[in-house]
Image (cartoon, rainbow, N blue to C red; front, side):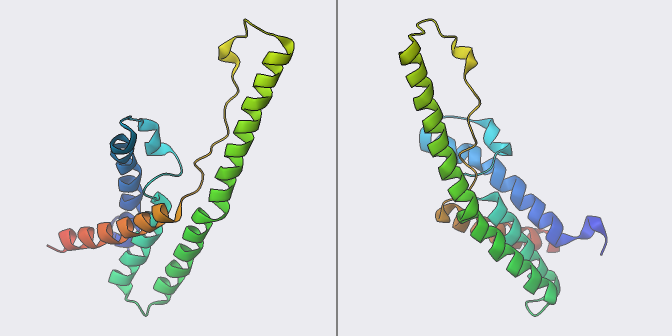
Length: 159
């Protein structure tokens, strides 16, 4: 199969791009704030990881069939990725939240204890990334995004 006609690959890449881009308007609807950095960040709704692996699985199912060993491999891969997104990565994000709170509390303590009334606000430390993982609903909608986008792409490319 030629790289440029590898439908499962392009479906997965399209799903990543779409899921990352759609995070911006979803956040705008939710909190009325546009944040273009979401296009390149981890976490958030929908999960681009889930969208990618389900698009890959769907593309392989369309091209190779559900009885294909490639479909089996991509399915197991998708399950592991989505489990990781809601498990390990989510808990790492929760730990980052606690650590960021500790850093803020420690900084406040130091300011109060040493009475630094003119502390330069530009000396703030860079916070740890808290949006590493996904809520289960974000993974679910990422998976739905991957499947629907791949089916739509297959339909459009088959015309």
